[in-house]
Length: 392
Image (cartoon, rainbow, N blue to C red; front, side, top):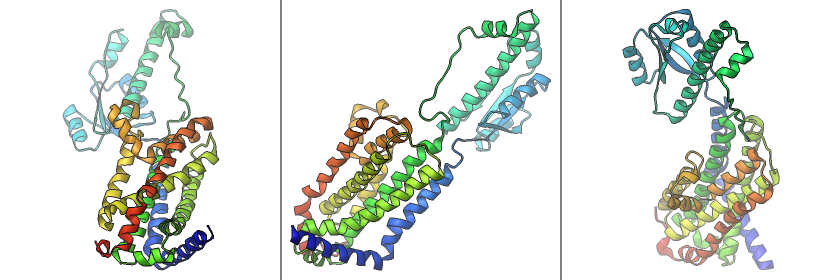
């Protein structure tokens, strides 16, 4: 045990010198992650999409038609940026991407309403962006529904009903919606704690692969192993500890930005998040070690590691829910520690779930630490056999 500690400290001293004298490490582990965190904090600073430009084609031009246009403009999402003379001009604006929707108010709109007839308002919303489509459709529909209800209440009160009686007749069944955990439907609360850990994992796995791969590329692998007294375990421990330490401190910066700058609430256990973050970083270090040991090629390992990292977000269930995926895709999502980490993040940050619900996810992340053990023999071979050195 004493020899192992001594060998690990020897490698640790060697690695700190490498980190200090190679600026690329500082860029990969500190500069780029922090810059990406700041970028996403700024990107989602508003929290919710606001003032999306739309066009209105008001063919009636009356008091009531202008009133409904004003109500649509007053919604949080829609901004009436253009009033077009006809739908051909509205279509041109949508096709050019200038506006995201066109609202059509037909001729005789006010006359039909005042004569207790039926009329309509049409909204043509671009479906190229699902989020924008959903937000605009909801707010425009809410504005039109509210306007319609106000007109009906006025007509009923003129017939002698009280306002409460008119409301009861107009809406005998009321629907109350309660949004749990993220009542403001703030995208910053949901996406910032998703994209920032994504950047953390990318730079963790890239730095890990780079740290070992450069030993092969520059034929210093045997020196690395010799510094550890021939112990591959001590060599790995001494090389990974500095990277883990720096990335964990960077993760603390990430937490500071998420909770203090973005303002994301923390309804659960901070200690669970801290433990999960340690396992998250260690898991992606383990995956990086596995890739470089199996492939024994720096460039190829970086390419495979980058592709694997990007796939993690796709299969995390953040944009398309896991429960709606095919069973095969749900199973595939389990090969990414990011899937379990985001589950813990949402549970502890927004839901305030009991700690017991996060234990299975912690256990699954812990299993990824077995990967370096499976590749120790292969790693020792490529570090001591010259035919694996100086590859691109």
